Amino acid sequence: MGIMRKLIGVAVLVLAGLLAAGPAALAVRPVDVVVEDRAGVLDRNTLLPAVQSIDFYQPTKVAVYTYNGTAADNLNEEVLRFARAEHPEWISSDGQKWADGLFIFALDPVGRHVGTYMGEDRKVSLDHREDIQNASKELLRDAQWTDGTIAGIQRGAELINQPWYRSTAFLVTAWATVTAAVAGAATWLIVRWRTRVSSRQELARGDASYANVSVDLQVTELNASTIPESSRYGSTLLEKHRSFMAKYNTATGLSNQVHALTARALSLRPNLRLVRSFADAAAELDALDDVISDTNALLNRGSSWAPAWDRQLAPFRNDLAGLEQMLSKRHAGSDSATAAALRSFRDQSHRELERWTSELADGTITPETALDRLRDARTHLSELLRNHADTVIEGFARNEKEAELMRTDMESAQAGSKAKYGRSYEPSILGTIYPSYYFFSVPTFNSGFSTGVSSVSGSRSGGGSSTGYGSSGGSFSGSGSSSSF
Image 1 (tube, helix red, strand yellow):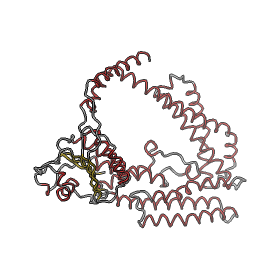
Image 2 (tube, one colour):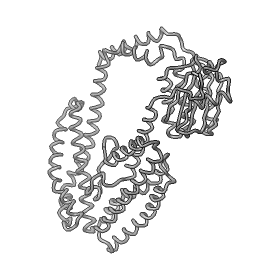
Image 3 (cartoon, one colour):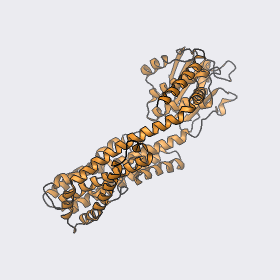
Image 4 (cartoon, one colour):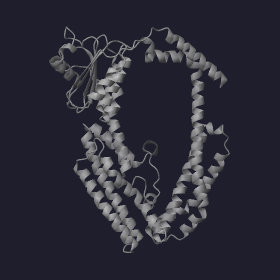
């Protein structure tokens, strides 16, 4: 570690010397800010002070133009048309370029395009123009039009007329030159440290679950011994229980292995996988013994049947409670027929849940019937969510390729890729009996929908920038481009 500190210190001194060799960079506020918000989406009280306080390297006039177009529009052509009609001073005297000292940030919130245009003395590379546009896109996708515009202009100020010694290429080269000797060692140390921290976290998670299972082991066996095999739900849970002790013994073996590891050994990736296997095995057992207890209490109508029933209802209630927030998201089809069907089902289900609980309490229905009704209701909700998924895909996707991309992400979310979507075991009777993909839940819908929108938006912006000015542009060749978000 002492050698590492010395090497890093030398690298810092060398880089500082290189930076000192360059001339001082100026910090200049915009000489003028012109806002033409024809789309009516910007908050001038926020935008103007923010842009006026941004530092450029050279005196620069900033122009902001917004309009409501369509996805098929050429934003470059529209900006040029507007400049020719309303702001001829934005164009050079020969009519072929943008005026010197000018930086235009353009936005079409309806057609979902963003563009950047510069005078010849302010122009940057196509990659840098894309960088400026990308700096705004996350905010623009969330309909934060003012903040997105500010972010784009801020990034433009950082790149326009940027001194050579502040360029990314120079900094990367300089650091690569002076830190090559320490980079590998530093990376190795960081990876080892992060692995050790993760191993300890996973070990703590596993220990907590394993302790719970061990303390309740005799109670779990007693609960399992009184679950009625004549019940369809009971018999299935008993099948799960038959492998319980085998899994517990496996978890015990893993516990012994991971606790024999030294602090140094916990820094190794293979051992992190071992510790994670222990934690996952213990967590699964911890959830299963709770479900065994609830199954016994509910099917036998024991003294704790009511809270056990509440725990079975909890996942469905959470879905119903999350529907409105799901539907209120941008592009979520809030006003569609499928959204209306979901809301109607939600209101009806709230009444049904109260009725089932009341009938279960007075013995009008059996626990098996109550679980059947809950299963059927969750299955119906899954069907309604699939129908609504079709609605939002149709509303957001512009073509079949985009629709298929969104459809794949929605299906993958339901299939339950834990690493990508954070799916986890549902500690309920239905969640234990049926596979994780059987019910389409609201959180799963949200995960798939968000991923689908991001994938499509990424494919749109990843398709490259548009640099032409359309048929009406004539011989105009000013520096500028636009892209979708």
